[in-house]
Length: 301
Ligand code: ADP
Image (cartoon, rainbow, N blue to C red; front, side):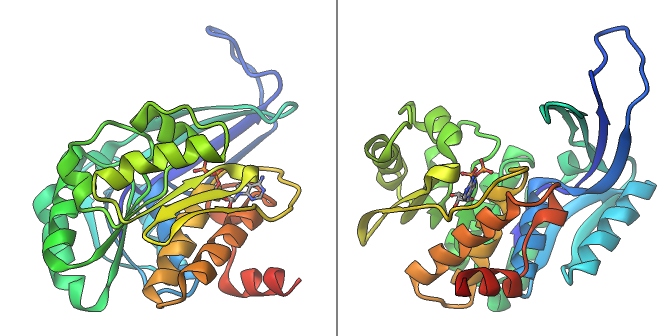
């Protein structure tokens, strides 16, 4: 089960990008499914998990587009609310020459998701859905309700604290696994993450608040895991990245799917790292997320 944001990404490319007050002609435009919640739902489904999305879209054309895209990946959208008005969008401007981008996200329908709606969905789905993925692109009340319900129902909550925002300690107490990247770990804990030692120190901040497994993702520098089994530093797979968008979402979705399937912890981490690495070798958000078969082929070398 994935609780989170659903956006439509509107991406324009131009070089150079216009300055304030300037209008110019760009070189390409694309429309695609995005939002950390939707990306992680697609990632979990492609990793082989039976996946239900809990979120909200608007009644506009983008709402139908987002639902169709989720359905195309086999994600159950029966728990996605359609609320009057606009669907969340991310407006992405890419410099066609340097690849640098600027992004404006407008949450729209994502902001209408409420705690009671999420709680009802979690209660209904709990018997068949042992793992819940959550990020921080939905209202705080959704985060609070999800943490509370997961604790009460005995569900494993995987929180990707992105974009990083301070949370009350009661949320962390309900989190089974947290997977911040280096920047998010630093923003939340105050520990600057530059190497394995500092990643471990940052991870301890989460452990002290009751998080069982802490996975600090460090891009091409690998992953530092702190949990009941101690600390491990897992090297990243060697790939040539061309676009790192959705690497973290691919990682979280694949990890959630692996845990739900009952895979051994080191195997789950390895599959997640391979999914994250493969996502960096392709352009875009959801189009770059690998399938279980692609991860298998990659791991067989
Ligand atoms: P985010 O996208 O949230 O910033 P990361 O960049 O840390 O997250 O990526 C998540 C995971 O994806 C990493 O822990 C790693 O396993 C994999 N990954 C990301 N970038 C690379 C890369 N350049 N090379 C190999 N693996 C990568």
